[in-house]
Amino acid sequence: KRAKRDSLFAYVNKNCTCSVQMVQISGGEFLMGTDNPGIPPDGEGPQRVVYVDSFNIDIHEVTNQQFQSFVLATGYVTEAEKFGDSFVFEGLLSEPVKSQVTQAVAAAPWWLPVKGASWRHPEGPDSNITDRLHHPVLHVSWIDAVAYCSWANKRLPTEAEWEYACRGGLKDRLYPWGNKLNPKGQHFANLWQGDFPTHNSGEDGYIKTSPVMSFPPNAFGLYDMVGNAWEWTADWWTVHHTTDPQRNPMGPPSGKDKVKKGGSYMCHRSYCYRYRCAARSQNTPDSSASNLGFRCVSQEQR
Ligand SMILES: *[C@@H]1O[C@H](CO)[C@@H](O)[C@H](O)[C@H]1NC(C)=O
Image (tube, rainbow, N blue to C red; front, side, top):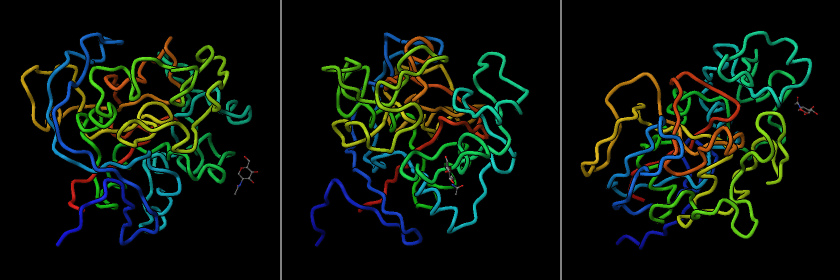
């Protein structure tokens, strides 16, 4: 007879020495999106009733150490490593690295393509992850994220699963913990304080990523659902959503960009008010950057 399952458990992959905690989320109905979009062109609305089946989800973003286990076991080479560069936020670059970068993104000049930037070298060749093994892995494309999750016998969450998990059972709230950004003056997520992009005051304790689980979890026991690193989801991007009740929606069958959720340590109200559960943004599946990571889900019975 099967013992009653613990909702919180350590999942140990047979090919993986990493112990990854997941939490079981019971299926149910929730209100996805919002009728008061913070950024209307992002397709945050309309608010709609969505049902998702039960699933298990990593309690934190996949860390450098976890990703390293995957790479050591498989020899996997990320897309940023194949391309030879990745996008890094200018404010994090050393002067020698910055002086070698020429091209920039016109609409967002603080993003620079840096030769040799990758998950192992988050700010380019003169940086490393030695002191950041428990930080979220960065510079992983959607393809890389899918490869990691399949190796771990998991998959990326759909946007609906991700948002259901983010909301932690709260109805129609902005953040995983409620409607106030800093209840009682406390920081609940790794975001940007100060003036973007010139001055990060680091009031929340961090200028870049933080170790996973540095801020309080939501009611489902999930950490960093907003802030720290953006998280890839399985869905193709669209801004058009039906208000017909949906069961386990998976987004459009094809597209150009994938949906990412949660915002990052670079998000500030003035420029990236996207550290809300309903907020969303997009990147092509081969994109990678110094603020984009992921976590996995699974539907296996445990
Ligand atoms: C990692 O970077 C630090 C400085 O940020 C440096 O002291 C250390 O030697 C580097 N480690 C490796 C293995 O390159």
